[in-house]
Image (cartoon, rainbow, N blue to C red; front, side, top):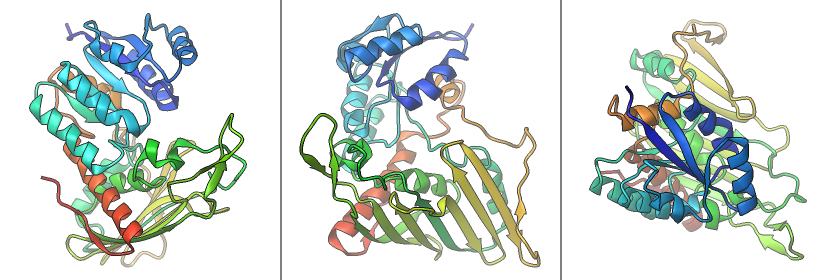
Length: 352
């Protein structure tokens, strides 16, 4: 018989309701026992819709509940550090939504707390980009399909914040989202599964629309996260990277990661709305790129919830992402932030 795991939800937004709750429901002997959302009304709605018996007025009640074995944190990053450390201290396993934290200092505090409680599983939800083809791409690279990596091109470019009549979004507020800019972190995390460590960055950023309306308020609010970002990077081994991140570009190139080497190229395109991804490959001597077609056995998939429970039950270590892995992309986004705010190149600190 599998070890029973009782889960408490703190924050039940789109990703929690769309992916985590159904994912946990599919696993035998896993029970969703309590929930706390941002407001009492939404907490009650989530509990009723998903048949969760206990509702809590605040997140501390979920953490302190003796009937909860594991905490799933679906809040914005501003609460990730505080809740994670409290949950680990209370003897709970933790799965926290990405981004790991608002900044590297908070992420390191989380890692330090997790190190003090090695008996508890501490996991960060991975980027969903690249899950379908990621393992196969890693295998291609390991077998030198690219030859020597030379250039990396990363784009997260759309018009998601082009409409200036939209209310200020938490992703536009550093108090909620921290130092990560738009899709920079999620794309770099995906890229990091395939290439050596990024060692140095030079970034510039701007705000085309520095103010936004706030729901229920007469005055405009200041946007504190850039809506355009460009990054040049240096990668271990000598390769170079270019990042273009924007939410203000009509008819832009969308989301992609392109890898170019001395002998071949791999181009991965993502559709965040449909969770689809397309991979095209080509090598020296080819006259065109070929779209990669994988068999069902070769394809990866979203299995975050199953991986978390398997780690709790001691069936396998955390696959994607343990806290140390998450610290790597936190160090990168922190360095990018320092670079664009100081207008200087910045070394990306190595994670110990």
